[in-house]
Image (cartoon, rainbow, N blue to C red; front, side):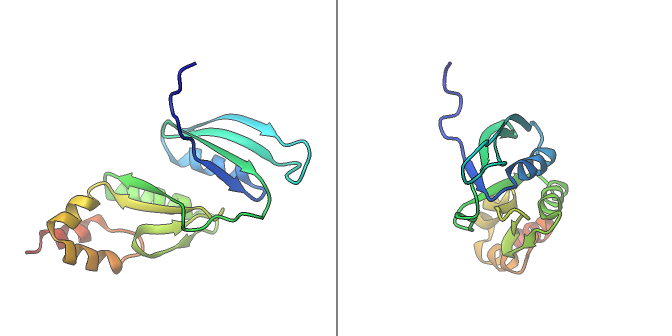
Length: 154
């Protein structure tokens, strides 16, 4: 079988991998769980190994215990075409106890960090770096129209 995706992100969860994956596949189009394998023994006994796809990209999640919590050192960036998409992912990933952070960052209730940003962010910054960055640093959830106005200032 040919390799279709050489690198697969693997996410370590304490004991709620399947719950986390269910949230993620419910939010992203073209997403599905491809397998759930129960862990029958060892430190993660009763947990699961979950293979899944988010928007067609393969991921793996597993219950490994509390030894390695998520940090902001690794995050997932979600590029959005419009404010409706930003709001969808922002509120969906915050559901159930997530935490808002600055500049479009959030941490979901499972501890995973996400950056929810407009696909045009680079263009906005290129058009007017100082004004756009100043506007961005004032935001928690990104507002595309505010960034667009900042980019249009001369």
